[in-house]
Image (cartoon, rainbow, N blue to C red):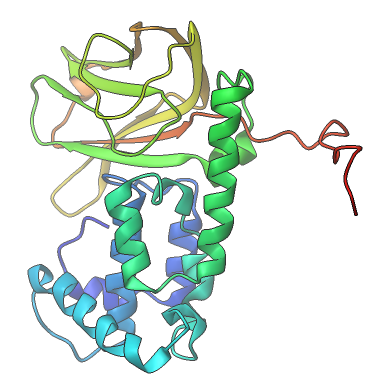
Length: 286
């Protein structure tokens, strides 16, 4: 997804792209919205293979092309049209909950009208109920590793470090009050649960402890794109008190090659348990 060659996008078939986007090993740079944007550009190139502009022009041309066609499909989104249906299986692998968690991204998704409204309605409902659990049901985050949930539904995000130095960042989006800061310094990667120490544009949880399930992966590539070295923490649970930080990886300087690509998976809230306790109230009037 970081390749600068437009022709690469044209060559990726629907089946190959479905495998890529659905893979738990996909290295996502930035956030899930960037996966959506890459898919949008790829779909445009599949539909208009004769287009031969530059990568800088591609997103603008893509948006213009789909915007012009919105008028022809009144009441339908593009993936519901005959032209769009072949791409449904690929877009199904998008983790929409991590796109609508950011206001600017949610607005773009709605404006583009590519994704069926039924998909979005389902995700909005799911996230609203998850937020209520985090706020009202003493939800403190995952307590055990659920590999299936982590591989299929975790937040996936990444960052490229061009050279050695000191870096501190956060990925955008609403994370149920868990403001996670990531620091790279002196060959250490550190996670910090920011509560009161650093400014935060959103709300933060004041619960004494919060847990997050995560996997951190690192990779370096040579100029041809061949993997030189990689490391992973595997899936872990990290529990942090307010403003506590924890080293999650210590890098061997002999294996440290820049640019360094960092990819993380996060699960900030436990999947809802479907048990007998999730029954309807006894005083329903049906």
